[in-house]
Figure 1: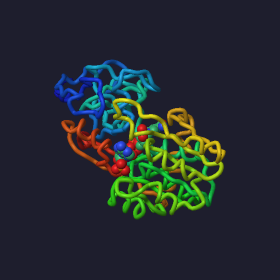
Figure 2: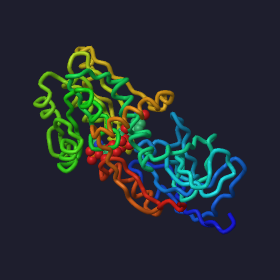
Figure 3: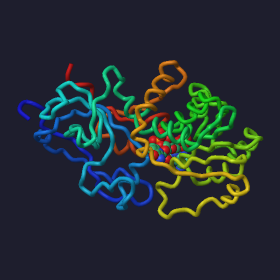
Figure 4: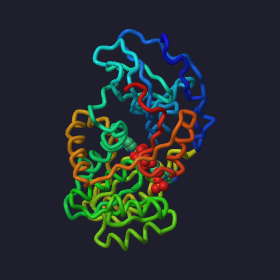
Length: 342
Ligand SMILES: NC(=O)c1ccc[n+]([C@@H]2O[C@H](COP(=O)([O-])OP(=O)(O)OC[C@H]3O[C@@H](n4cnc5c(N)ncnc54)[C@H](OP(=O)(O)O)[C@@H]3O)[C@@H](O)[C@H]2O)c1
């Protein structure tokens, strides 16, 4: 790469996780910066994004994405700046987003799913509000949950990247919104900055009892990020024609054996309820309209998009683990560098 950088610090998948994911499931490696092949651009990664779903990509099973292979750089989204290009459409200095993986330098190309960050957009927003978590919140809530003004919406993982946006969108659409999150500090942020009507601290309160008190007419929409006991508690309090949006089930992602399902699914029959899963990627053709609407609300100050930014490539595994320890409020990011050009 001429006088450019020579060393690429990376984290490779070292082992398939069993139970709770561990730092030792990853290997730190110093590799040469890749040669810039025709049709690619060399990107210096600036921010990496962390998603609970990455735990699933580490396992050897087919899903909506192929598994990461042992010895490959750990897969993850990022934004970076082009420092050398042999690729039409990408110029040195351009900010781009794509599957950066846990490394300082990546080879990018539009055919590998990379695209430019729109001019003037804060660099981290494509990694959350205008990226996977914001769009998951938007489509899961509006398309699967179909909330109507005046309805009661409950959101678990309410202080997280997806849940915080889902609840705020429900509030903007005129719903009464109850969050569920771990710890008093998170609950205070959910009702304060994110302006939910109430928030239940599942670590210190009886969730079922509090749902009964806060939702006397039942829950119309439940946006579920966690599954497990929380899902079961909510199902005991659904209203007639309730919609249960299965977005994620993080409480079980590190289980060694899958737990039995909720014991009270019959409530869906009695209450004529519906429970439906979804994958945000299926809404790809509509991402533009959702980003425009979210951007409007952000600009009007109707919603906040919080970030939790850790620093340094050496901290990639420990930053990922923060998601499962509930240490993040808002989107979990890792800053690797400032823009090297300009
Ligand atoms: N369907 C889709 O297309 C799609 C797309 C993106 C994400 N998702 C799902 O959406 C959910 C949220 O993802 P995110 O990226 O926004 O992460 P996040 O909510 O920002 O971070 C994860 C949060 O989960 C909570 N958590 C961790 N362990 C838990 C446990 N055992 N029980 C209950 N809560 C626990 C923690 O908050 P507390 O401190 O409150 O416990 C933690 O902060 C995940 O389940 C993810 O898989 C689905």
